[in-house]
Image (tube, rainbow, N blue to C red):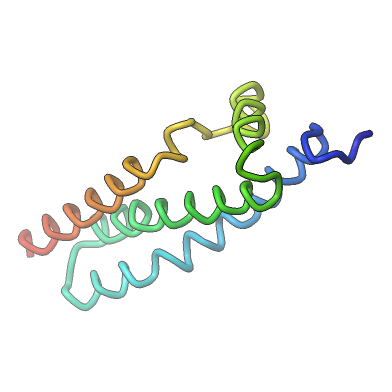
Length: 122
């Protein structure tokens, strides 16, 4: 039964789809922040680092939703456990905290802080 919902084959497929979605989503969610930074004349260091931090919570939310839709709410912890067991391959750059809403909101707040800091330095 290699193609069952909780098989390693399915987990690898979900992981590869998530990795392929992550990079285009950085540009999709980061450009409004960059646009505002260029409009207000904020330094590029603050703009690019803030845009990256601004995009991350949205990316994590969409990828977490993709995992939930692929294997269900009751089983997604199996996928995250599998990711933590393969940290040097499919689980690269994964940590359990990425699925926590409080962490994602703190990333948004930190990106807003970078925006404010860059705005007042101008």
